[in-house]
Image 1: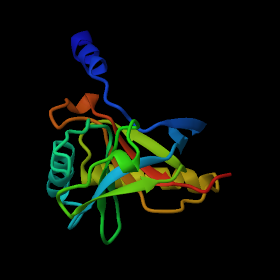
Image 2 (image 1 turned 45 degrees about the vertical axis):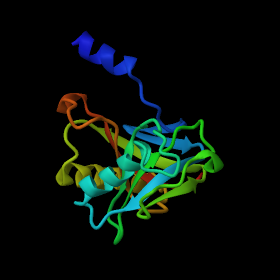
Image 3 (image 1 turned 90 degrees about the vertical axis):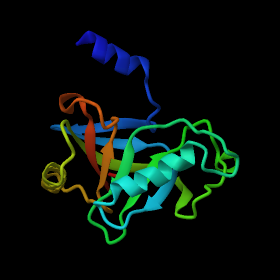
Amino acid sequence: MSLILGSASANAIEEPEYEVVELIGEVEIREYAPRIVAVTTLASNSDTTGGFRRLADYIFGGNSAGKSIAMTAPVEETLGVPEPLMAFTMPAEYTMAELPEPDNEAVTLREVDARTVAVTQFSGWATAGRVARAERELREALAQRDITVTGAATLNQYNPPWTLPFLRRNEVMVPVATR
């Protein structure tokens, strides 16, 4: 087991910078730093393969420079909106001016402002039922504390598809009003 866990940490993948500012049971209130994301619109929340391929093509050289860009985690997917989005965070070393333009017009680059969010984690496969349950429990925990949700939920998946279910890290995140 230590070999599996050790190899995962040896190949650490960059994640967006954040600080946990409050812990409410298993819910973390996080403050995220500004960042840049590559985004594509999904036909539906079940169109994840198409969205992932478009974004992966961009970071694997499908861009104006023909340049590979390091993969980061998580892969983000908005939930419960008419036009769901999938996003990859760009490595922190890049500015908007330094990133090459995507070859595919369905992929765009966006700056994301600093934000405060509430997050709950779960392991296993991110099935529709597990994601819905995590979102419902997160919203209930926030309502009990009079914390206002200010936007759509996001599913964050941190692991490659071949990761064993009990080692998977998934999160449901909602933006919240600062207190």
